Image 1 (cartoon, helix red, strand yellow):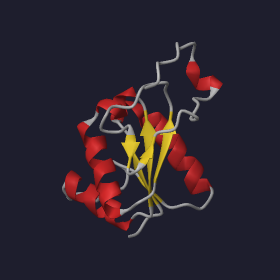
Image 2 (image 1 turned 45 degrees about the vertical axis):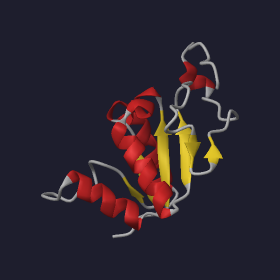
Image 3 (image 1 turned 90 degrees about the vertical axis):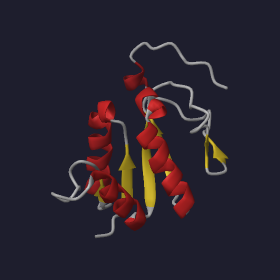
Image 4 (image 1 turned 180 degrees about the vertical axis):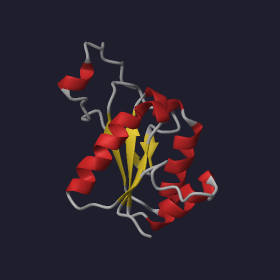
Length: 128
């Protein structure tokens, strides 16, 4: 099955990923999200490769956890290689790693702001 959106997130950010998925699906946008859409008995990695192949866009739930995740880096690299648009959703003030500072040819924009309700009195991270 083809999906409109592949949602990439780190496990500690599952609540934010599920919220993004629910919002998109309420708007009629078909989403693939692990572990919900992994076919029972299918290899996890194979499922992700199949899902990114059938997706039209990758939504990256971006946090410090995602920033440090080797799996997230692989998913983003796969999306870039396939020419998928990547939409980062920043849920924390964190500085992108060197591997993620440029997604394709576009640098992560400083204009992304974490909604006030999610800031929880965090001090802003310095931006490169």
